[in-house]
Length: 133
Image 1 (cartoon, rainbow, N blue to C red):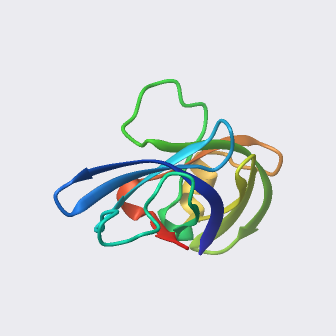
Image 2 (image 1 turned 45 degrees about the horizontal axis):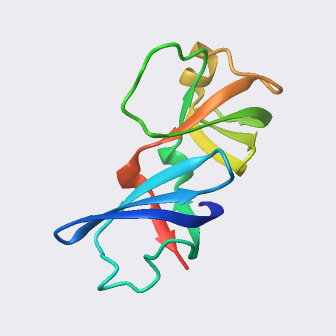
């Protein structure tokens, strides 16, 4: 499980859902959809320290992205290590927000020609992020 720390910057509420913007650094923002509101979860307030959690299998790796996509959670980083498996490979990416681990198919690893020291973009869908105090 990936775990990055940040501070809540903004909370937008609609019904029982909140879109929470978390500042992982001065320039890196991640967004999460949670089934809570500031009324039901007191930690959903600007400035509150939270952990941003997401599974390694939910991290999408992009290389040389030159078009707009709907994934809002994007951070560039450098591949530090690759643990190549027969079917799946684990990639460790060093980013300004912290280290992010991604598990992708070895076939995708080969198709993207991923290697250590290569700069890539790690992306996570908003609905795949969990928040924790």
